[in-house]
Image (cartoon, rainbow, N blue to C red; front, side, top):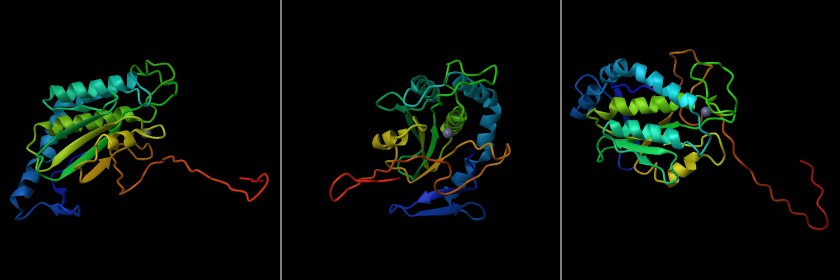
Length: 236
Ligand SMILES: [Zn+2]
């Protein structure tokens, strides 16, 4: 995930979203946006790349299944707190919300998932899963690290908009943890939200974007069959 300083989404009070580009004779707000640009993020990244690799490998080595992401939640919360932020753990102990930036401005949400899959890892990597039968085979270790790094990179910036970081548990199960997060108020006051997911079909260094759904998802349907009389004969 990268945050550029050349443009930003703004939402009006009615919820209509417009896009403001910087450059030329921009407004003061647009100048502020330009100040929180790639340079600030790049310098943080240059300083903390080793940390990010270590964090991702730590999470990868210690995977947790859906709705049991307690240690991952603690790990994320500890780093956010250390950076002077005030993370809010979800009531059941898995999942984190953390706000930065002004409260009287539009707020964007950035979301990542944290859970692992019930799969045995056979990679032999030095940082392979230490939990039998559980592994980060879907890349959520990377997602968590990317969002944590983004939060810490932006923590010291004078942001023109608010940002809410949403560390969501239980993406791999149904019903998913997104429902829990929304019920806990994750989307209150958020004008737009962005999520990310690794995609091995893309070359390293390339990013694909899309509005709306992009990855697979599961859902349930319920069929109620009525028969006017006797035993129904149904073939599905
Ligand atoms: Zn996934």
